[in-house]
Length: 132
Image (cartoon, rainbow, N blue to C red):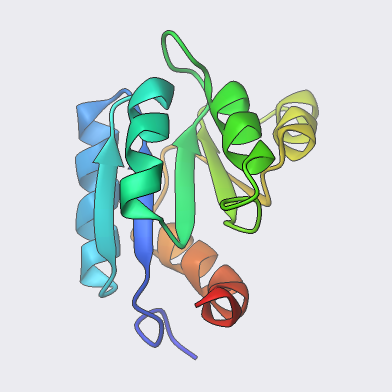
């Protein structure tokens, strides 16, 4: 299976316009529908309309950080099975563990590559296809 076998609805949550746009370009090249959110509150407002198959979520954001955003999404039964991949420039064991505690399934360190994002989508595509 390659990155284009599964065309999913992917949400990217990051307060950096540069990161959002880079992820959007990479994911669209992989054939995915991409939805952007500027922060945790924006993500929570959009998640019900978008109903993403996968969420990439930055950790360090104003108002509502990525850990809180992930935990709130995961507590909603409708979205509990949606994989969340944390994006962060922090690469410590504590940061990764805290992401797992919040409910994240995977962790990618920034700066990321197109291959890393598409690999993450591919990794969870079996779960995503079962959900649809």
